[in-house]
Every structure is written in C-alpha cells, then in structure tokens.
Length: 178
Image 1 (cartoon, rainbow, N blue to C red):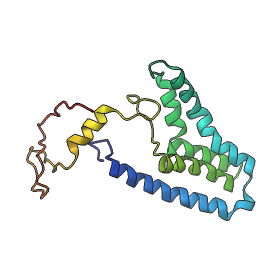
Image 2: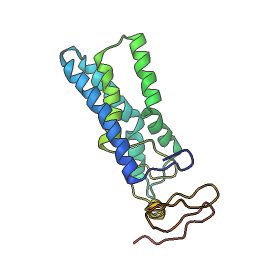
Image 3: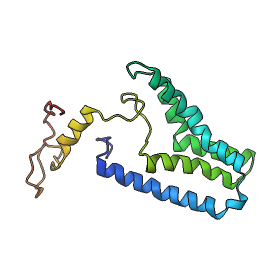
C-alpha cells in the first residue's frame, strides 16, 4: 500500500489487477491487429518459457513435498521469470539479436494475464508456493479494516468512520481464525 506497509488489501489488489488487465487488453489487441504478421512458433516459445522455467519446477516440487516446504531456489526461479524487468531484458535482447517482431507480445500477454486474470504476483519466501490463504493475513486485514489512520505521533485522525483507533504504538491483538 505504501513504502511502510507493504501489503495490499483486497480492494487495492483488485485495482492492481485492473491495471494489468488494461495492459493485457492492449497487448492482446496489438497481437490480434497484426495476427497475420506474427511468427507463431517464436510467440508460443516466448509465452511458454516463463512457466517452463519459472513455475512448473516449483509447482512439481510443492506438490511432492509432504509439508509444502520447498527450497527458495524455486521462488527465485519463479520471481526471475515472472519479473517485468527480466522479461523486458529478454524482449530487448530478442529485438536486438533477432529483430523486433509481433511475437514478442507473447511475453507481456503472459505476465499481464497472470497478474490480471489469476492475481499472481511475485512470490515472497514466507508464503506457500501455491496460493493458500494465511490466517496471519486474515488477522492483519481484520486489524486494518475500517480503522482511521494514525499519525506518526500515535494520534488518530478525525475520521468520520467512528471506528476504533489504531495508534502508532499499539500492537496487534492475537485473534483466532474460525
């Protein structure tokens, strides 16, 4: 949400997904507009390499793990292949070495599709490799839901919500998840 609170609420996550959906629509529209000019074998390869390297090995390891714990290397592979930075580097190198072409749109289509349609983001080490709702996240969402902002001095603003106040010095109370 900001540099001090690096999490998303469900509403902010939906807004992020909507932004990626706009990128997906643009990239897909360009691909459709130039359908006859696309070299399809490179397009399919560019679309698939991201998951062949970055997702499938970790997904297999996760499913084989009795407790869901897998080496961090799988997270690094996933994040490296699903990063817009590394994807941009792949596209730039391809354009430089092979030449610019419409098949390159397969890369942003894949990444924007993952983020907009499935809600997939980069994976932190502390969460399961496959999506699973964490009780700690549910507790955090309950803690911040409907709360007025607390300033640096620990004073709440004059929010008209009338909800309970969170101060900068308050600590989260343990909550049970049903």
